[in-house]
Length: 333
Ligand code: BT5
Image (cartoon, rainbow, N blue to C red; front, side, top):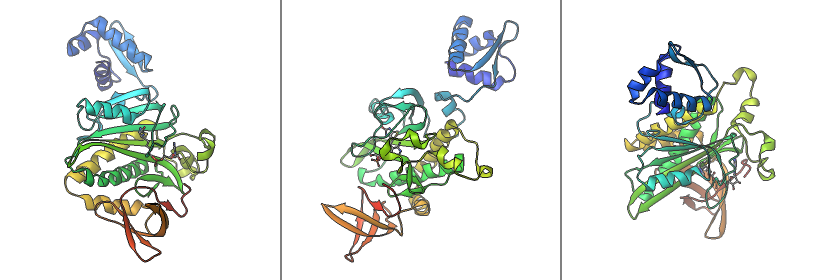
C-alpha cells in the first residue's frame, strides 16, 4: 500500500495530493495515509506535508526497494513481482522457497546483503552489505531439464548486455557463464532447478555482481581474481565514465533477462548463441579440464546448439563439455 501512495505522489510531483484524495483512492482512512507517509519517510523519502494542500514528494537520493526496482520496468515476465530485503541468507534460497510455494513466474528476489551467498558445487559467493548486487529470478520454462543449458548461457549474455548498457563497462564471458573483466571475475551466475524426469518445475537463476568493492574489500584469495564495476569504471578514461547506480544496474539486468527469456520461448536460441560467441573469452583459447579424473587440454573451438563447449584436445579428439570447470589461459581462476 505504501508504494501505491508513493506512486501517486510521484505522478503528481512536483504538485501535491491531499490526504483525503489518497484515502479515497486506496480505500483507507486519512490516519492510515499518514502512517504510510511516515513509513515512506523512514525509508528516506522526503515528503512535505501541508494542512491546506496535502502531501508533496521532494527530490531525494535514490532508494533501493521493490517499488523502485519494478516501477515502469517494461518487462513481460521478469519482475512481475519483486521482493527486496536488506539481508537474506541467499536470494536463491528465498526464491526457491517462493517458487515451491507457487509464486508467479518472473518473481525477483533482490537483497542488499547475503549471509550465506552460494556459488556452484557448494562454493561460497562473497556478498558484503551494500557493495554487491544479489538477484534471483524464478522461471517456469516449458522445457525438459536437459535443455536448460541455454538458459545458463542466456543469463550470461543478458548480464553482459545489461552491464554494458547501464555502466559502459565491457565484460567477457568465460564458459559457461562467468563474467570477467581483464581476466578477473565481476559476476557469477547460479542456476538451480526443481524438475521431474522430463519436465522442469521451476528454475531459480541467481546473479551476483560486484558493484562497488575496492580491491581491499575482497578477501586475500580473491584480491587478484575478482573485480567490481566501480574498480573497472575508475580505471577508464574519466571522459568515458558513465554515471550509474545500483538501481539502474539491477533494472537493466532484469530487463535484459526478460528479453532473452522471451527469445528462447520464441525459438530464437541461435541469436543467443551468436551473442554468447561474441562475448566469449573462452573460444579460440587454450583450455584445460578434467573428465573422469583425467586431465585434458586443447583449444576451445565452438559452442554447440545445446550449449556444450567443443574442445579440440591435444590427443586429436574433439570433446564436448556439458558442465564443470575449465581453466582458460589468461583468466586468473
Ligand atoms: C558462481 O559460482 O560464480 C555463482 C555465484 C552466484 C551468486 C549469486 S548472488 C545471488 C544468488 N544467491 C546466491 O546464494 N547465489 C547467487 P562459482 O562458479 O562456483 O564461483 C564461486 C567462486 O568464485 C568461489 O569459490 C570464489 O573463488 C569466487 N568468488 C566468491 N565470491 C566472489 C566474488 N564476490 N567475486 C568474484 N569471485 C568470487
